[in-house]
Image 1 (tube, rainbow, N blue to C red):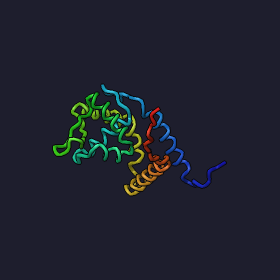
Image 2 (image 1 turned 90 degrees about the vertical axis):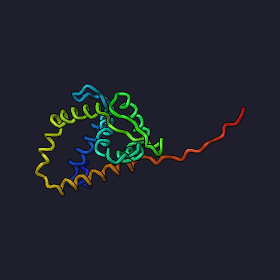
Image 3 (image 1 turned 135 degrees about the vertical axis):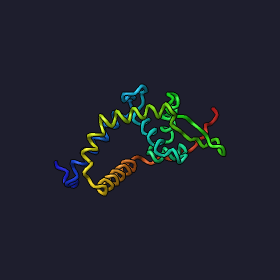
Length: 170
């Protein structure tokens, strides 16, 4: 049965699904990406986000929200990367509970090597394919991907309210 309701977008949707499934399958494992450290794709996204927004002193809750991951997932990624020396934790002078994450000098070195390797082996080909597309089309495609991301998140079951139940003495 053909899925006619998707119309001319069927192939695009197929490729988005394939990308999502492939990413989900491969993102959990750690890889070296031709560097001396190993890290997962999810950990790498945390490093990239922090590097892009380091001037904002964003706390961990804000980082998790903007990456679309849970606070506990961010905490696990951060812990592993601090242990590897890729990240450093700080707290603000006015609130010790306000944890700020920074990429260490070593983390910057590793990220730089990763970025060079990844650009040469993955993104260069894709960017060449896209370079003639007008910016407004790229912006629209970016918006479409954001909508797809929001739809994927909306399909999850809402968190159920947890209640405390007293345990009776026996």
